[in-house]
Image (tube, rainbow, N blue to C red):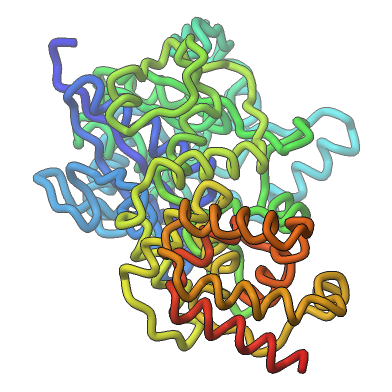
Length: 502
């Protein structure tokens, strides 16, 4: 590609960012970086009625958490701003007047009530109403008005919209980088509203103008925008501008495979569909970050929803994804979301991280408990338990007994582990530990020698000892626990159980 690749992620600030939107941002980012191009963040807030306070900041924070940093855009600067559409109203006004002057658009004065009545009549006659070449000459618009009549309506402030004038009987050839060539008959299209009565452009006009002025070379967006592709191509032609390449990504489907993944599916099955937690007066929607997922795992999972590298490899760093990503390997069909696979990805990345890298997340979870613990002990616990964990919070939950001496004991475990001879066995082994080196190998050997000398089964010492150390019959191997706790703490916990059972 000779021209610099420039792509944009252009979400609307109408609420939290769905992972489908995150996947769109990711594919734009990967495409841009693969071609040494630019990734731009633009906020499309033309629909002011649906604007939600805090959504813009949420979008930026999500991209930062996922390390998908824009090269320019809202919050990141750049020479093609402003990057918020509501701050570009004067720009759109200029271009809507250009279309009107060239006869490519017209004023429409139809009221919402009039249009609703026409739609209702169409439903009754089973002939759906469409505002286009077949009906527009009979409707309340500037096409049937004299110049004086139009001026009078505009001068008196009569509400209007501006519609794009699509000529009939044309074969529109579309070329999508994922779906190939598509033929659309212009006669089937309606004259879309480009400019609303509130003085704001619709998505269709603002989108085209911004992409042109920001020198966007490739428009990579969700499948739901595929029906708008013909209109957008006609708009580029009407302005006499070069059309960017289009690529429409497949849907992310529900776990059962039918229908688009929604927040309701996440609520139903207990998994997040948003990158970050989203709080409203109605409650809290789960976020991947707050649920304990690593950003690298979320990115890796999303990359494989609709894109296939053509190999069996599943774990990819962001740098590897950039190197391998092409739109040719993006599927046309929807990609089924798997909550279990997402957990699997997180497990893999937990294993890849060192204890030192996981320590900040570990500390954040541990902060809920009032423990004063050294980093040295925390790192030992992380290294010991992380292979069993899908999330860092599971390491904390499984390892709490390392930081807090048991003061009570699981009732069922006590009944199972504590027998008539347990006290004497545990007291004898306590004496053995006094002269034992406190490393795993030495401690394991001491236990083996003890059961051999005492001529008892391993469980006779193993279970009461585990109960003393953990407070329950769970956790890693007993010699490993003792090594991490150290001699003084191990002996103190044994003594606590002996007093408890006295």
